[in-house]
Length: 130
Image: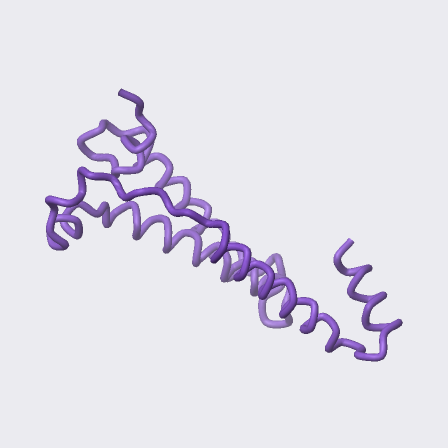
């Protein structure tokens, strides 16, 4: 749908391809004004006020962060390179990137949700109800 609309705009307007940037400027300006006027952020949780920055850094789950960012980055690089002249879909580099990325994302899921609570990240207990 978006491709058809973009083709119609570029073919049938005086501004040609520049009209897409004008529409983006209008959309972003409306979003900025609307958010600054209508958004009321919730109050921060009271439990975190007594923690120092260093305590919050120590509570981060570095294994989950590494698995998630590494897996997602590897998968997206593999999908971005896919089908180009140097990396056809059947090449070893393409398959290795995609398979490694999917495996790392699966390992992140297993680490966060399937291992005992002492090993999992804070993501699991955020959704627990008391």
